[in-house]
Length: 289
Image: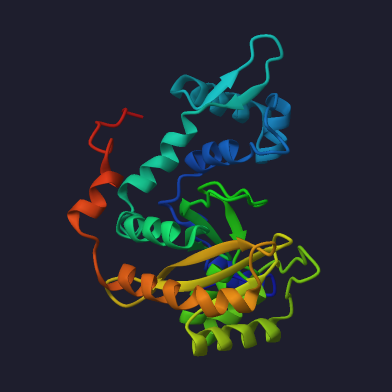
């Protein structure tokens, strides 16, 4: 269920998993402290950390010390400010090592990238967003930087629309209504009914598209990928700049290839020889956390 701001408080409380006796509030606060760091807060002192994570200064001090001992935070000896360490990557990288869909898709994504010479991404849904979990970038010039782990709004991205189009219509509408439909560029479609029309078009055509709706000049096509049970699990998109392509040309020349690749990802595991290069280094025993 997608929780909406319009839900009555009683409904929200009944559906709130944080009220379960199994929920560890202390652990959640530690995660919140790590999540408080970002581009706008690359380093913080204890009072700033407490405010950003919504906890007392003493709690922030305990969590910061623990995370520093574990190697996830570093403390500058002069300024007393904390910042993340590269060990944070270890947590995210573990997901890439164990996600069967990433392993299954990588060889196909690489082949597609080499065939069309444009950027190819695999995105998985999380709430109202899409998280990019695999990426093969173009060797040509591009103005869009999309690192792994980047979250983008589902409503205005082709991969998000492709996944939504594969979901039941009532669920798709509910998720769109729950989304913060910000107008990122002049082209961003924010009206729910217009978005539902785009999803209907995607279902009919077999692919979704977005025309510079999050990044200006970024054209992209998206197609859903399904799991072994036939459920929509993710989506693949092709991202290309308007300086090299027009949207009609992408639809005509790239959409059929993208749909074929996504059918293969959904139905046909890669051969062992194709998958082998992506497993190099994964056999190393991970460091104990």
